[in-house]
Length: 479
Image (tube, rainbow, N blue to C red):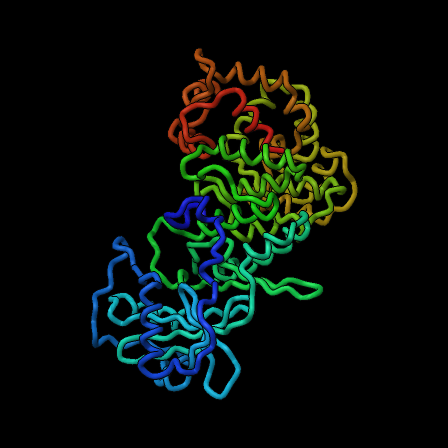
């Protein structure tokens, strides 16, 4: 759950088995008054729909009219048409009289001031995805609303994982299904805000496992402004970590620095011999700074078993590396500084190459010239299918041209950039007398506005300085 709720990471990953235990047996004597008493007793256990104060509380208005959608209307006669089968902590399984079809019923008391707002939002925010539990009907009586969903015999995802050890491919399949479902919510501008393992249930057949989003109530709540879609991304990143490792992330994200999180992640993945590209993807999802997390669309394009580019192809490999490069990031700025000061021979070769295609000498080349130049610089003449995508990602200022500085950052030989002597020498050049790289020490060497540099610096560290290991890691992450 990460930052999606007040629960700790440990609580996030704990199984919710007790939430779904059936505690009763089918009994057709539960009707009329006795049935509603049973339901009301269980409804007191349901979390009251709280609309947080910073988004404005809803005034209780007994005369308020619920807005009804074109297809779903609020009905009456729930107790006359349904019988209770079993109960769990937060819902009741019911079946229609004279039918064996079962439904999942949630009960919301009208006496809670925000219940009507919740029901109104459920009606006005339809969820149409084949792997999101389907809303069937809403009923009401004098005291309660009864919200009915489809019901199938499914396992909690945590139960499934207890008896199924996942390899990279099977973990990726489950992860992709989650990304697809939550990606649908995000495409509708919704945010779940409370994702954990058992937000999903699964049905397994002989050849496949289908995953369903079964906990949907949180989608309809007015969440605090600090809870956004980026919280969903972080929660899914934590789940991805657990799918791959078999256990939850061991440190608290909201109490740890980016470097501590990255260290824990890298150590775990190195121990299990998991690919570094997956570690980098998870890190980009669980970054403690929400602004710096990926969108789910970006996650889809980086996922480890889907939409893969053949990494044997140098262009494809370059595309994988370049897709998330920010030319105004601290790493890009430092890379360019190193190329200028410590890799002058290589810079001159690349500049000469660039100038051959810069016919008018304005320091920019056009799209066709870039394709040819990039292939030469990266020693690859095969498979150009990703060239246009690469170009679009590189050129932020003018979609028809690319600058020399951008080209140098991209085309520089990474082995030269990450040479130990180069890293050590550049660190000594950029660090202050106390042996740390700070905004001020960088500002003395690189011509950039201090305020802009402060903002860029804050993207990679919670502190006001970088030590040598952090600096080295920052450059290595650029691979």
